[in-house]
Length: 148
Image 1: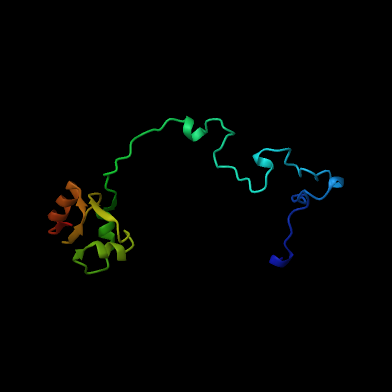
Image 2 (image 1 turned 60 degrees about the vertical axis):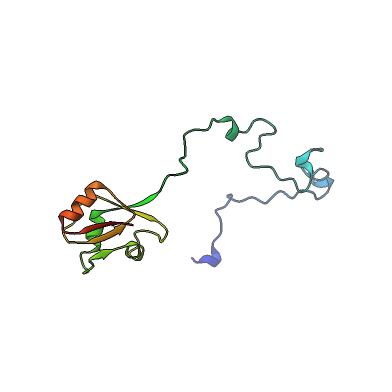
């Protein structure tokens, strides 16, 4: 069996209805579109969500919640992830370029270091934000937390 001799299962496909091919086909004349109205015209395109003039669902349902336009989204990186990164290397400084190169963050992302896990080597970590527990753990290991 290969791609050249694959066929759908028997009975799973049907021939398409051929409309607009004369009165003898029983689908001539208005070609199953009915008489008059927007849907009978060529070029008719229904708006998504349109319910025939009834108030559409996306307008009937109340808005919910609040979006703060001043919110800053951070890419969170935990200390255990950093510890696993430096196991085989002699790296002493970690900055945004290092995080991008290692695939932990995109180049425009703001980075926040969080305190889950332990770190044993002295590292100088440059990030946009740190949690209190992360700063304590970094300084306890003899490192330095530098806020960008």
